[in-house]
Image (cartoon, rainbow, N blue to C red; front, side, top):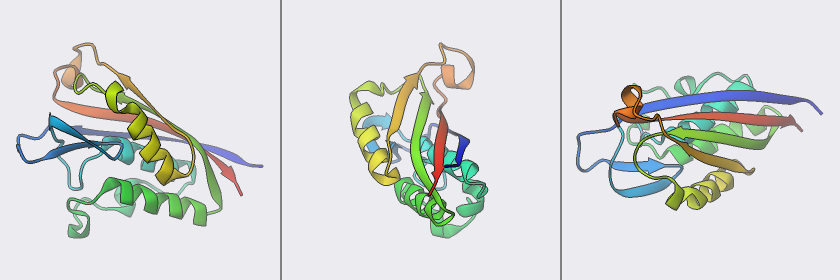
Length: 158
């Protein structure tokens, strides 16, 4: 059985728009500013998609869903992730797991971790772990200017 590893990364700044919702791992975080992005700006779903695409050697999320294409304006990133999972399967791969590290000072992820893991795992068809990490006040993330996510995906040939 062949195996491949992919790494994904995404980062978005917080929005000044009070109507913009924060969505992470398919979960809406009430009372927290949303992120700027062409789609719903779900950094976790985006990093997972990039990790899967990289592992399958299918390019990157920008190639699949260009940020200048109006068809993806306000798109549900979990739907986009599902499309990536389908493309990976079509290329002959099965997702073994994805591991995510989310870097943010706010919001607290722990109260929503199980829900995010459950939603992501359901879309991916394999275990997805989500860990919260702080930037400890360093840089733009430490100044609470945005949220970043790193993801690693393991694929197995079918």
